[in-house]
Image (tube, rainbow, N blue to C red):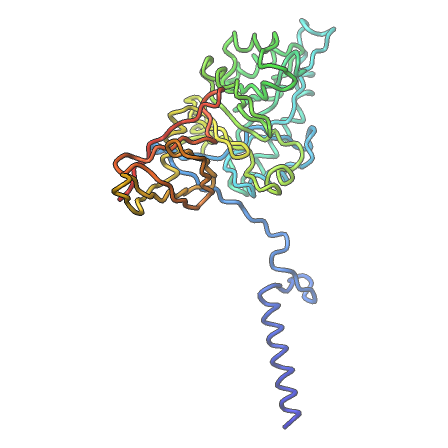
Length: 385
């Protein structure tokens, strides 16, 4: 009898241990003597919830990325996997095509062989990205960064580029012209980089004077250029926020609890045609380190679609009511209700605030910017009773 009890105990323990291993490990097909942890190398995607606005979906894009084809630290496969894990829908691999001045060559005709040579690395990077991204369902906008001296020439991303091998020129301005002539949209990158002010150098002035610029980075990595609002308004540009990532987004964003920089492109569908139409129509918002920037009306509509307000109780004597404000998105909002102190409504959470008994909820959204001088939109939110 005692032996039976011991045997049963051993069998029970073995079954329990096997069951436990079944949920945490699986048996390798090629090496059956090995159990593999179920979560080993299992990629997971950060799903980012954002509202549609006027029938347009906000597609999450990074239009400024670098790989090991030039000076990035991740190869193409790593960059694509990183973008998918970070929750993006659209990327542009914009490795460098140097347009630094070759002083004894400026003014001479640039040989086609030199253009092809200069464009070979960014071309291969873009082609490889398109190939790898198909397995992750990411849309790739063909792109290249035209890289000049920051103080005297500036940097520009050519998006929807058709032929990278024909863009390079000894003359920096001509390189931008070449890209524009083949239908690329030109984005002015990090306009404050190596500048004490946003005053433009001669090449930058020329690109704007000739109408070559279509968009501008309001935010680049951790840098925020409020003065770019005025440039965008004056020249009718789309605004963008991109990582310009050279290292990894994990060390700058995920490990610090932030979503990566994103250009939110409001489009009907996730196609190249729809993305271009949206950029040309300037339906974009810029997101970086908890701040959202863009056109005031689009910001208001985006915020109004992001939150809901519901009446909890009414104080007839004070002519006020307590209202539950719910943030239905993956972005935090910092609000000032009326003249009160700031209130943070974190992603997928609710807070209770006091509001007027007879008026909509008036919220000034402090982490939304629509102008250089800390201009924040004020939005009226209807209250459900």
